[in-house]
Image (tube, rainbow, N blue to C red):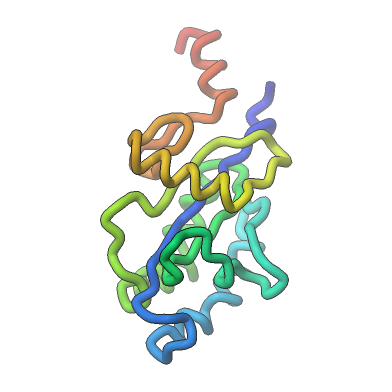
Length: 161
């Protein structure tokens, strides 16, 4: 199997400091479309979850109505990392404390999926829950504790490296 047979899914959660309609979040809301457009054009980007509105801000999979969910699929970890910590996304991300509360538990999870698979809301939420319960593993991991794609793991075992 080639590495291209797997892609990297990511989910992140954020708890708003106020309802989305609050003036405190006006700049966050104004940046949604430009940041999503950056993602759509980013090298290695494959897909992002969105409603007909073009984002996922209307989806509330948890009991708390102020928790937003965002998830996407990327070719590899390097592409996702470059997008998250580089360019226009990073400028907006540096302001996240203005719009979101600090979350005590896991709020981001990464996992490998077969190419062409598109995660569901339930699947994404389960990966974060798994990370909270069990810590990083091939099932759900973080940037800090990444796991190689299943193909890389197989290649490592078969070559002995």
